[in-house]
Image (cartoon, rainbow, N blue to C red; front, side, top):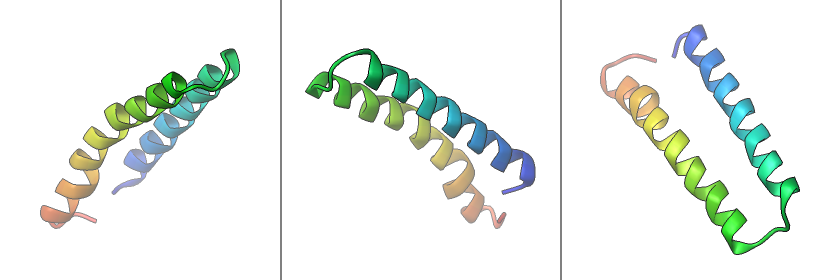
Length: 62
């Protein structure tokens, strides 16, 4: 991964963590809140992993 990709990952991580924090503090912890956090994590991180990490290793990029 090049530097710009690492910066994008960091920015997305900070944004996702901030949004998760807002969800957690805005309502009491319940199974629904946990589901929303896990589902949003899957939606955000799985495509990024597939695009940059998995395909990057297969293409010979580091």
